[in-house]
Image (cartoon, rainbow, N blue to C red; front, top):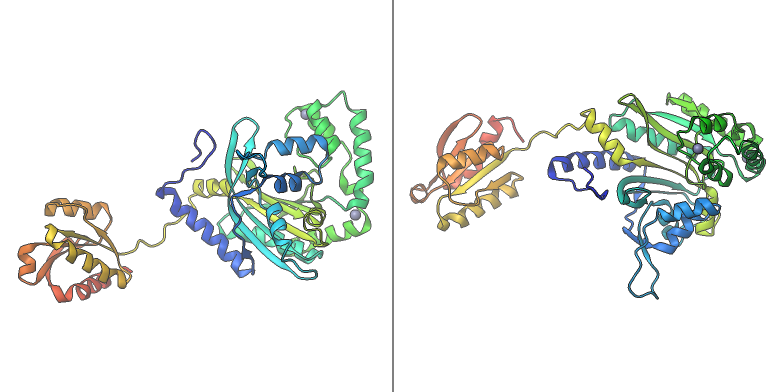
Length: 426
Ligand SMILES: [Zn+2]
Ligand SMILES: [Zn+2]
């Protein structure tokens, strides 16, 4: 649930689902030898701002910079801080110190990110970021793409498909950019100022403009596919071939754009249909130039992100979260303050045997205790009363079988283990 100001509050009724989601993702990444990086939520504003706008032209850089939250510090001498708006820049910045040439690094990070949204103000969203550093081979592109699909499939989103495009290299981009500028100038009167500005500075930009005239102009404009050099073309063919052989559904989408200008060669989106709408739930691509700029080293890089909020919503709507088998638990109630210690001792013995307990937090009648035990979902109820303890026993009620009996003080654990077994619980 998002509050008015775009910040999440998850209560226990949602958190167990988040845990399933996070654990499934972490397990797939573990199987592929990706190591987790835990980034601070607070980051140096200048590092992030410089990194994110590095490969952008003026207008685009301004718009992007506005989306980064600036936490100015009271002491103006200190560098301002930001709440991380994404992870790639931070990962590159922090790992630049440990990265060695000719070595492969596989990293991931997951958690909340923060941006200023145009209308809503500061906003929180959850993202998974996966980065493979050190390889310029299409093998690593295929690894990253396949991994992103694998994670979606393991989460139960089996109908996800790929949209693929190539942004080419610096050589084949140059004439494409030139032709795009000429084309935009010759259609300047037909498209809105915003689309013109965005595409003029970055022909790969997502305009998100609904104006039909703009859409038409963009549709018939030049596409990078027609400009790819033999090497970029060959690499793109390899990626498509491997993805086809892996039976991953894909569409080549020459109009697949990205808001960040830092990608080169293969770019992709992970798309899914939900409620009749096509929704992008993640994507990525190669970002060699950005990596070089930030690390100061020649470290090729390819990665992807998943929009965890969107994935959570879709999984929830599709009822893909299945609660784990309910664990066995025992409700314990003591009928007088003198017996509190005994209650805690019994609980401790049960915990040592990995049995969950729920302790009564006040003095109740037996009927009230039964109602509380039912509400807590406990299979057994132990009631410790003075008169029983004096006779060396306590009352144990089996809530499932609706049956009760006295058990000797030395045989409580055994009686509970036996009851658990007879109920076939664990
Ligand atoms: Zn090229
Ligand atoms: Zn427009």
